[in-house]
Image (tube, rainbow, N blue to C red):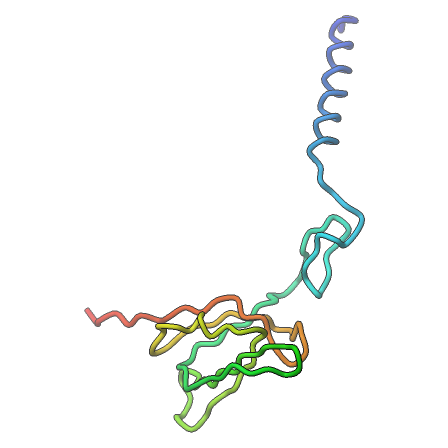
Length: 136
């Protein structure tokens, strides 16, 4: 048989658990926490069904840092891996990201936004140098 004391303990435990959830939840109905141009849901959590990042494996041919109005841009010319030597691609990244390429030689792998987040440039996330391992 359930006693009055057991019911009281259950009600107090449920109240305390609800209070803990209320204190620890940091949900918002505004979009102030969301930094992505694609937007976030009402909880401020990123939700997407496809990868918002694209990747490029290539050798660096050259590059330049330039300004268009008040915006600083970095344009890098790449030769993608597995293409013939005359084929190159130019990618323009937002800001001066030349330091991300310092010391990188040979083949690199870039990760950057699929969507142009600013006028005529992509957000560069990372540059990794591909190290060749000797054949065993």
